[in-house]
Length: 264
Image (cartoon, rainbow, N blue to C red; front, side, top):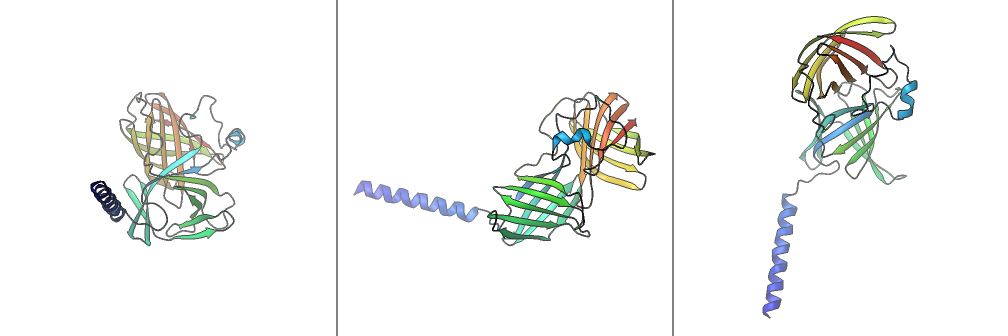
């Protein structure tokens, strides 16, 4: 009898413990809450990179294989006010964009859930299959977009480009004058960088285009910056040729590279 009493008591403790865990668990209906790391795949097929049209010739030694491989990263968070009230917060530095137009449907052909995320004040959207804490699909700027961008996002990741911590060769903080070519026209621009260790933040303006919330990293002699606000995206990669000069590549589509030179 004593043995049975101990077993019953043990079962009760386990039951209470499980119930406590169940009560404390955050309820959600679809996407798990917390940090997510998304990636726009600008080079979905790496072997096509060498044949991609370039606005200006790319230097042979301008290589960024150690981090990006054509991946443009961005960060967002999923939260729930109620179990059925899902919110997405897209983050670029201090910029936070709230997205609430999020819908789901079940794809019978694949037996997976499809999520459709529409960005405010635009026709842009993310459409992806969702399974096992991963979203995978496409980003389009409009329903008539001829060049959808492959997209993947993973739950539980909050880094931007990389977890690497290669010691920077120098401090890139300061204002940089940029020169690059687009459509056979030379354009001047300005890039303001603020570096703290491996962390890098910046802003960029060229012509009538401005990106005010660039976020990225410094690894050895290379800089990486990205921005994605739902309406437009930008990937900046640069390599220092001296303490006051950087050569790099800028991409804001899957179709073109724009090379640039910057002087501090």
